[in-house]
Length: 399
Length: 65
Ligand code: HEM
Ligand code: SF4
Image (cartoon, rainbow over all chains, first blue to last red; front, side):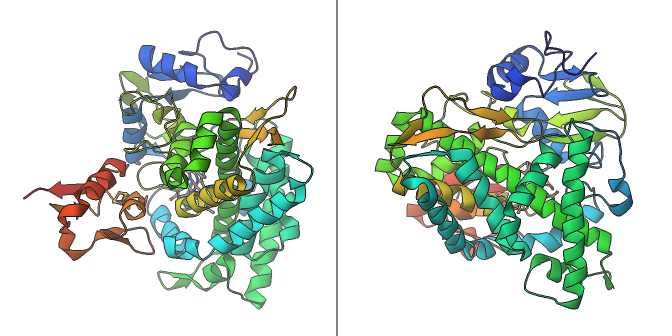
């Protein structure tokens, strides 16, 4: 089965990079949930796609049967990054015990206290981006705004110059969004890897007040960490923190550009922001993660074999009507919202406090200066999908 | 009403703290805990219920008394 052939049967032959699915997966999930809640495919090895909240969260909590040793949604042949990254990108690609202690080293960098200290910077970044395009009266809300924010905040946390932003953005996209193209994927991973490797070596001589220097000074069982673990953790912070948050900001702005009633309501009543941010995260969850089945098992009657993959669609789980009333609508003041956009269980997004702050501040600053905007007529919004789903171009007219 | 956090379940989503910072605290590793032995003032019971309804790990328990 050629990967790019159009899908005619989503239950037994799904394809997450199918263009229609990338643009509008919601109806497909609803149908699957009703007819075949764990779909399957053989297009890139055997994989399963659970779409019910209960199944996705149960799998996420069973880290023995479902390992994080291969979290790539688009399976790729192993390549040489193995050499420089024998431990992968901990904690996201690891199971306990490696997961437990590497995660613990990262968490304080994204604690709510620490994140508060990045808020002013985030607000300044948003303000200066808007200044760039405000007078022109039109902008690309994805490229000129959403895409620019998280990468600058992460650059600050890694203490690398802002000028690296474009390079980082390109590498992260190559790594995550073009996973089907081994050349591009390799280029992205090498770009990030080589750059951060040089920073690890540099910070050994000249430590600063940044994540890499902190990891260099950390000890595990009394021993310094291996360079390759530090590199993996720094790469993860960059890869996990950029495309994801930018996709969430972009999808939220796309929603507001296409739903005047919600936009006007949010502008009129900023106290809705707290629930609105969670609702955008639920309805437009960007991230799907995979698991590798370690022993033959069964989920909802589907026989899974060791070596199969499970694509944990947190986005589909978040649209499950068994858990959410009016699941397919965006309800800005939704009070009860147990969404799992940041995952579930021990791999809960380590950067969720940061992501939430960036998303809230990005929307606040945009609406404060641009209370009215809509899509540019005759132009098209484009979406990326796979591991991370979000809009990549949103041409808008401001007012 | 009294609240209890199950430390085994809590994964640090911090929804509880965002919704009711007077009832919960979160440490640098994301672990949540309750203030004042979890005793909820009568006028904050709605906030407590909201926190429970937003915890994706079902880690907050209400002990009604
Ligand atoms: C809206 C934005 C974001 C979304 C939707 C998101 C989503 C996720 C999800 C679903 C996971 C769980 C992975 C799994 O179960 O395998 C995860 C893990 C992770 N995320 Fe995020 N993320 C976002 C932003 C960020 C940011 C800003 C950072 C940090 C700078 C970050 C760092 C991490 C890390 C380090 C992990 C691994 C945690 C572990 O394995 O223990 N993420 N993220
Ligand atoms: S919302 Fe639940 S999981 Fe998150 S910190 Fe609070 S108790 Fe823990």
